View (cartoon, one colour):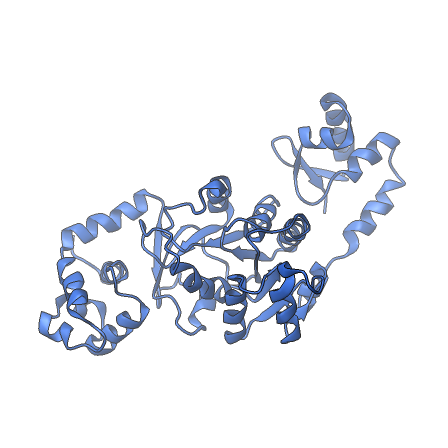
Length: 366
């Protein structure tokens, strides 16, 4: 099998020590990836910014058989590959400065025709911050908005966990390591579930460890894939401020939840608001800025239905939301037995007030 253009792009994407800047200089000089592959040592060494170590890295990896085998292994591992110019490359990223040359991903890439919001913030999030992140993540997903973040502990994973729990919810995690590595490891459940309805994305090749310098770079991709960036609980030196700054440079809407003056957890968030970020306190503020219609009728619909139900039916109905819940969870919330809960849910389903959203999972009917 002969190498095709995508294989040369993959090869150039995986060369150790060759990042976006050096790749751009090589492509500017040689015109295409195949020419770089075939270039002589002297020509490579005479390229601006390319040193002897880089030349050795480039030339030592020119084994077509190995490249083709490694590329084939990607598919076997469930890893997909795209690059600038390819039809699968996210359109939003084409518009940003220093766009990633290529992307590795597991699952899917964000749908360019749907709105996306990045939700970022403190790793050492407070209880209230985690509640806000979860609520916003769920509400974004309920309104068909894709949630983008970094799968970090704290705000990131709270928002992404809530979004993926919504039927049809989509969330995407941009990693500071290879997509075959779950970092942090404690988020392995979310890492696996995100691949089913959303995607795990990285510009770094598989096997790349989570190096500290990778994370500030990946933040431009988080903001680049989004129409707006929401910051929750950002301290003075929070990494989420880098994402917000990247969003500002990219012309994206930046939102921030305000916090108590003097609270260190909100220093960065409050500074963003002082400098022009939109102060938000609910999902409607975000949707209005994105030009989307917010359907506020859900709570009103609940109140109207409430008067039509029997007492135990009201209890069960009040415990439900648009986010599917398991029967055992509903029973725990209501204090009813599993059997009684099943009976009431069956009645509510017949009355078309609730819908079964999966095996033993129920949600409000829209």
